[in-house]
Image (cartoon, rainbow, N blue to C red):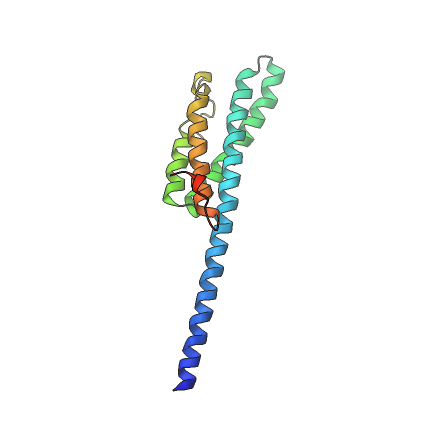
Length: 147
């Protein structure tokens, strides 16, 4: 009987250790996903803004290429948030994406410069996603992480 109790205790300890390791791995995956998503969102917004700032045809070609690369990267990172992120992260993504040109449109330039003019809305959505990141990936979230 003593051997059974000892064996069960060892098994419980192993399960707890594995659970902690799994939680740490998930937190690390979220950290990478959320950080890269925020970087991609900023890059996408900057590339779209830069595209509208170009006037010479020779400038537009390079800016368009940069825009399409940023657009693809943003969509890839949105997909990562969908797979690895929480429901709160997905909701925050929807808000961020709502301030950017559509990333899955068949017509990649189906937006106007005025669609990018609300820097305040982008900043607020970005900060909300950042707050989700802070709450979810820090081993011990600080009180300033947001609601």
